[in-house]
Amino acid sequence: MKKSILILCVLLMAAIPSACTESHKTPPELDKPQPGPNPDPKPEPSEGKEKMLWFDAEANFQRFSTQAGIIAMLDKTQEAGFNKIVVDVKPVEGDVLYKSEFMTQATTIGSVNVADRGWDYLQFFLDEAHKRNLKVTVSTTVFPMGMPSTRQGPAYRGTTWKGKTCMQYKPEGMVDIKDDPTKVAAFLNPVLPEVQEFALRFIREIVTNYDFDAYALDYCRFPDYQSDFSEASKEAFEKYIGGLVETWPGDVFTYNASGERVPGKYYKEWWEFRSMIIHDFVARVRKEIKAIKPDVKLEYWAASWWGALYANGQNWASKAFRPLTDQDAWSFNSWCSINYHQTGFADQLDTFLLGTYLPRVYGPDDGESIEYGINRAERFLLNACTYYATVDCSQKTFDIEEACYYCLKRTAGLMVFDIVHVINNDMWVAIKRGIDRYEAETATE
Image (cartoon, rainbow, N blue to C red; front, side):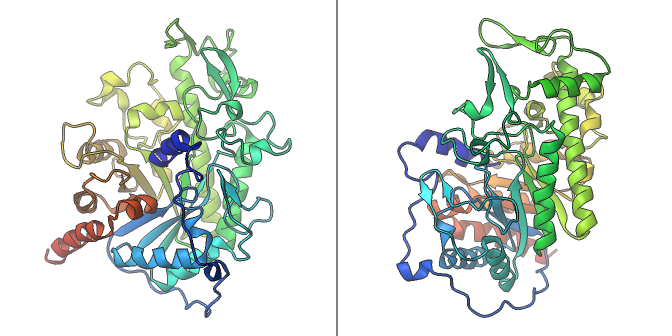
């Protein structure tokens, strides 16, 4: 999800004292909790399509270390025309920003240290958002539990997660992901039952203890094609195919002299297996959330370039979509099994957050345009769930006004990523123009 921010983090870690976080100085008196009056009862949400702004925990860690900082940005968010926010409370580092009985509070990310707040970060966001008639999605990364670039996070503390982080199969051999500083996160292995149960535990805790509108799964996937090749994943794969894998991992793929993958006999079945792991986990999450609070919606963010996401186990399409008969089947044939469509999890979602993080708005034949990404999603989702186009505004030259207008016009809602970019690029006014233009048009229809 946080592709733009995390790539920047890796490149600048040594030079900038906070991974993708601006220095945000606040007068000392504002560092103290500002209790204020008790919040009013949660008001009725505003009508119209949801217009969401994402509040990334890592990139805004220092900015939102004070209540005053949160209040100021929520005011700006409301003024810009948004009616919903996404509050990230578990960044890839693995510690959390809510009151938990078993998770460690996040006080350090990168080189930024935040003293114990003395107040509940998530609850404060909820109270202040509700005062402003803003709906709230709570988001967590699911499988990351540390940052290899800094060796911070639960994966690097104690022995709880020893042997449970992903084992990567690279040209040079097997490498534990937590020891690979080129990776953005130390992922736990999604195949392991104990890992899935751990994730379900913090999801249940948040849904049980807080009042909000939706829960968004982020990083609910495998890291990439190199993971996971542990013995546990081998055994689970053998159970899935109903037979033994004689040569491991060569029967999945090998590497040639150039470091390129050479498919083995179970190449296609392997990607199907991994996608089914994620499918089944998403289904479990939905069941758990709906059992606790049926009205809380399940949301999921993934990139719009579906054809590359088999490497992450992310089949966000409808089960009714048949990749091998699609107009782009030529690009899927090398990895897509006959039964891959059965791993589609769109029907498990209330809302899919379509990651059209692309540089141009228009271009039906331009694979780097939002229009192209939305057209593709229509073919792949087949009305299995509601979906919102989401945009990345990290580049100053990006036409955020037109993107907001077009995403609202074409899909059921809008999400802008991330508030740090909106601030840095001063895009508040342009966003409001795009939202207002769409709403003015629909008001006259």
